[in-house]
Image 1 (tube, rainbow, N blue to C red):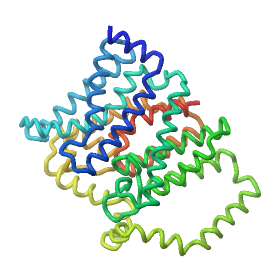
Image 2: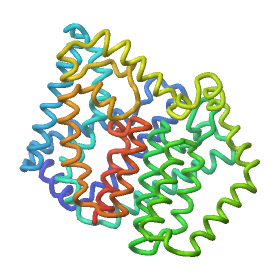
Image 3: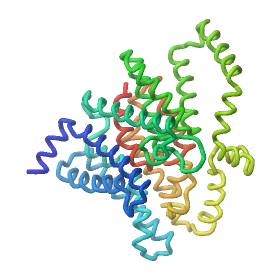
Image 4: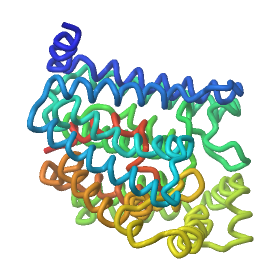
Amino acid sequence: MLLKTIKDFVSKNNYLPLLVILFYLSEACTKVLKKLHFPFYNVSGAIKASFIVLAIIFCLYAFSAYRKSILKFLIILGLIFIVGQLSFNQWNFDASYLFSNSIFFGRYILIFVIAAYIGGIYEINYNHNNYRVFEAVIVVNSLAVFFGFIFQISLFKTYSSARFGYSGLFIVSSIATYFYALSISYYLVKIIREHKGYIAFSLVIIASVLVGTKALLLFIGFSVINLIWHFKLYQKKFFLLILAGGVMIIYLIKDWLVSFLKLNTVLSNVYEEHGLLTMLTSYRDINFISVVNEVILQQWGILNFLIGGTNFTEYRIEFDFLDIVLFFGICGSLIYLYTYFRKIIRFTFFQGFQRNQIIFLLIIGFLSGTFFNSGPLALYLILVLNRLKS
């Protein structure tokens, strides 16, 4: 009876606003509890782990061809993960070691579990309530970013160090980066289609700058280029005037920009100690060399090259596609990415402007890391993909 009630509830798409609220509040609780040094603070992880278990049980009850294909994929990927981890650990079973890495496995598969639960990302019937709640989350978190910046509230900072940035109630910078990249894409498409959302879009842009990540600033730049291309502004005479004016404004405020950049004393120190590449990649170039030397060359055998195996708590590159290979090996990563681009991001559903925004999102995902294994991102990505489809 309970499962039948849930099935009826899911079929009407009433669950999505509740999931958005639940996931966001769990992120906020996790950040607050961690700040207060509670012994257990990972409410977000507990909520998502519970959801994965319950959603899989529901999928077994409300079986369909789509859910069958996802579950089959999860079983194959699960076996690859377990064998890879055991092989990397010299075939010794260590429950704590396996558990710590299974958290990352759960993050990798969460978006597939959500897709299976709802019966397909692109099968969601448009429900304005879904996007009202999503927009409310955008506003609430943006206000947290603004208050954090104005009143220097440490809880809302992106980094615990002196590096500039405010992420609101999101736990880590990568989540805030992708959330605002999705928000920018969402509002740009809303403005193009409906000529609505100008004020909210302005708030999102300001909040995105205050988040303070290089990837998000790069995404804003990509989006500007995409708009210019979409509306063919490069063919307009006034565009050259605006471009010239923009260059002039940058020249006039160059001293302010230099002062602003100096707020990022951490980045300045990294540049002085390790050079431009390390500063731009936030140590990822060093991580790559370290992982190659310490893991791939010293600890991997032929089996690991095929199905991966690593301790993600110690060894991560944070270039996303490379991390997938590290975690699942060559064969596992091919299976993962093939399924991802068939079930999650299907480019056949997108054209022109929307497709470019998704490509730009993947580019910053590769450069920033934790795109594919960001649990909190999964639900927001599904909502925005469904809205962006042509």
